[in-house]
Image 1: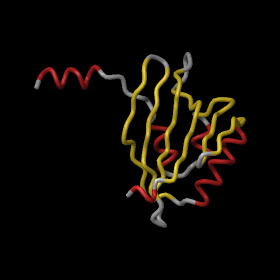
Image 2: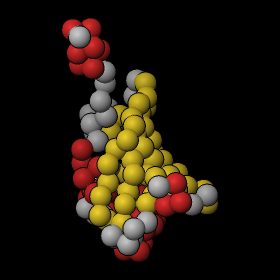
Image 3: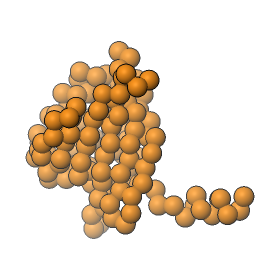
Image 4: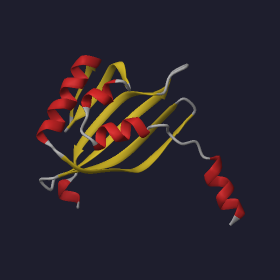
Length: 125
């Protein structure tokens, strides 16, 4: 039991509370402060590299079309400066999406999103 507690305490956590809250609240403006200047976006299998401004617009469009009911982080990991998290985003319309973010710690900054992937997860309930 002591070993398990020490192992959990020793694990690095992603400092992504702001990112998670922005997604939970469908707030692309709040999310913008965590975006890199260019972000790789994989939305439903279509992969593009967008500027920060384009990424904000893509996320605004997604949030407008998919009003949130719940967002919960299911898994996180990584090594060193590069980390990731995967969460389930449920909409008020009953749709379910898997949202993954790859983040990198930049000197003197919080974790910055380098990649966002959104996959339809509705059929996998």
